[in-house]
Image (tube, rainbow, N blue to C red; front, top):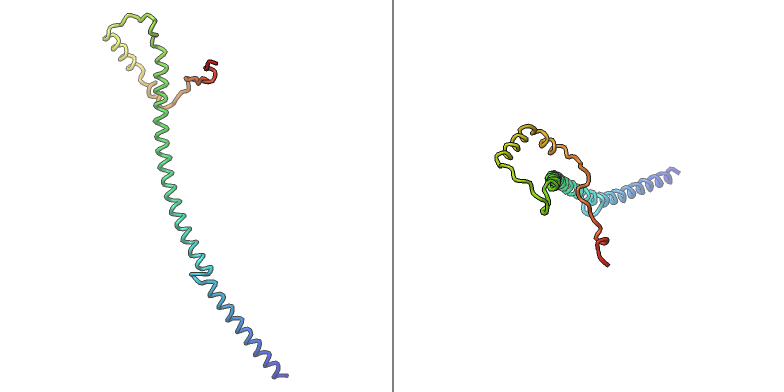
Length: 149
């Protein structure tokens, strides 16, 4: 009986050794850097690094674009304010058919303009800082209503 137990014990040890050999070969193939999971992990980590670099460059480009857009928007708003002021001042000009008042002396006009500028310089600075809405300045007409049938 001891001999049978020794034979079974030796067979079990050989079987366990063979099983460990098979597992070690599979583990080597699994961790192989060219074909196995190790290679896939290496490739994925390289792709993550590339994506991080491209993300940083895209953020820098978008920051620059947003700053340029803010500057252009500010310029457009100031030009729009100036155009609205010009359009509002067009209401003060008499029509071509209306009688024009007699021209005043140029020296008197210059003195009146200088006095007006010296008396109240603040509203011009405030108008540039805080735009005020004066309501609708322009009205869009529907072209289909203006056509003659």
